[in-house]
Length: 397
Image 1 (cartoon, rainbow, N blue to C red):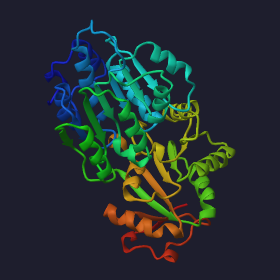
Image 2 (image 1 turned 30 degrees about the horizontal axis):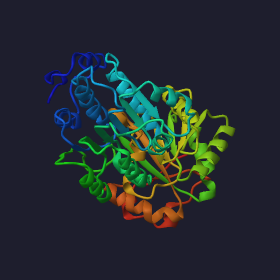
Image 3 (image 1 turned 90 degrees about the vertical axis):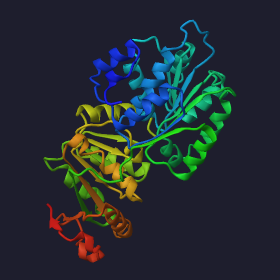
Image 4 (image 1 turned 45 degrees about the vertical axis):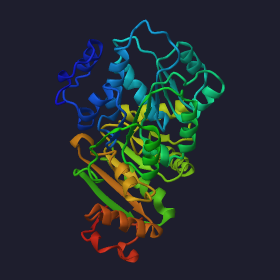
């Protein structure tokens, strides 16, 4: 499928597609929409930001709208699980945009927010549930909804479900599903062995579509690193954020408590700063994202919960306040900038304890990460005996 106009979508879907300006499907969309619309089980492997959500929402809507409108309501028919509240909210928003001309009710079930609106949505007999696993289990156990009528089960960002420890919850939710036939769709950026084993249990003769390129950073990202003692990292961050080109900055921390500490430090300097991690309430998380997206907040301090999947445009800089543990997480973090062919810069703070990890990241990257100095704050790179790949260091004030 080379154009959305080639596929015989229901007129209500086609109208929404045209209003959203969709013309040419992405690779993951072009190869999965037809088999999903035909009722096949599908494994879709593609990087975040490649249109995976529309790849499963469009054909699922198409199948639903082809049903007999007089069919008796027996419970939610479509279940979509996402690993984070932010990703679930994006899926919910995508469904509402694509189904705005159709009578299609959705219940969004998220942890960290009051039950009132969720109970109201469930009381409206939704055809679709979009949920994070923990809150959905709560609602099922409290008999606010059931999953026996689900005939389309979708796992979104399945590899992140594994990373975040959700596999026991997913197995529990599978036990709540009915015993009848259903279509299962599994979308993921990578496909590690535990996900493959789950797929082999759930999917029947699946169509597998893999359009994931080799893991690498966008070409237009400038990458640099500072060699620094841990206790001096707050000062370096403050110095960098004061530079005039730091217009929209994501700062990644390794732990939630550190993100809160840095948020307090930077806020005290007069910066407009948001913070995003799993211990924050949903209203706080949503507000932080909205303010960062609309530019009223120039700095977002986050854990890896914000490293993948979120649609945030025009990020000028990514700062790895804490270096990630592996190359893949590094790629996802720095990929928040230089999106859609824009330019951007990624800077990493490297402590003496990070050198082995940093050298491994650089080796996997296959090209040097430029060494930077900041006078009076950083240490000389020679003190850490950096790898030969790091030739070409230059100073930075």
